[in-house]
Length: 276
Ligand SMILES: Cc1cc2nc3c(=O)[nH]c(=O)nc-3n(C[C@H](O)[C@H](O)[C@H](O)COP(=O)(O)OP(=O)(O)OC[C@H]3O[C@@H](n4cnc5c(N)ncnc54)[C@H](O)[C@@H]3O)c2cc1C
Image (cartoon, rainbow, N blue to C red; front, side, top):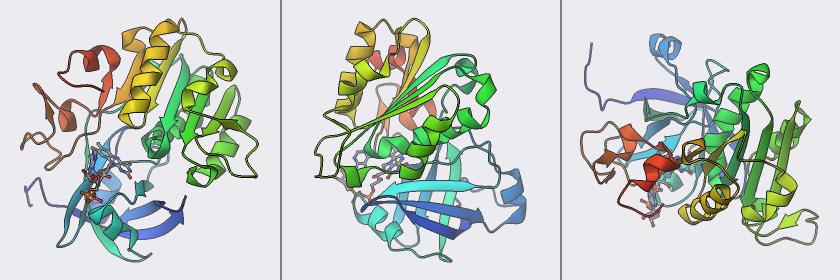
């Protein structure tokens, strides 16, 4: 048995879905049957994805753990490595190790109304949790999903964004920064959706993922709406190298984003020596 914690597992790309011009969802299957059978994860955890002879990037799992045997990663082409991953085809092999990181606190969400707020590719980790919640619908309260994208063609997971509101007690609201001539929906930042969202800080937990500036504005509004600091849950993104708390690359003060995060409550985030 090899005990090297940095050794990736080989995975075959079974399917590639083009979500937008720069986001693709890759469906992977581990080659090692024993590993495939034992693999499990929680919503909010991430994998280190390797491109041979190039390097590794952290990517959140976007599929739901309630669907065992399925591992999906939704990747935005941001630079060199993600660009190389986008060049892969169905049948190609990549390396993946994980799952890593602190997940969303699923047990704390049971029985609660849930507000999901996502910006851009931030919907990827939330998709894992949203599908998990909807797969176990009776365990959770009302579900409200707010998503903001730059333009209508930058909206990922369009199929699910139209399926989710058909579930019991579920609402989806989408807004774009720059509409095109066919767009009939909301225009403006995700915070313009508060009126239509109709949520209350007294009985709801908020889960947020997106660019830091979006998170800051959303958190400010939620606090004004009466959400407690423990009921605002978000993710912090930092450049990572090892993913397992060894190298210190992703440290913020005394916390390591890869093992103490990437999921934090706002009460925890506030104590960190950093802006959101
Ligand atoms: C825990 C975690 C989960 C993530 N989940 C996803 C996901 O589900 N889908 C997805 O598309 N991306 C995700 N990311 C971001 C992804 O890891 C980066 O886009 C990727 O590392 C960029 O690598 P690259 O070689 O393509 O870009 P590079 O060529 O290295 O960089 C391109 C540009 O992006 C900037 N950049 C690179 N990494 C980061 C980072 N971590 N934070 C801020 N800026 C960065 C660089 O400074 C540079 O300006 C996640 C990051 C973390 C830490």
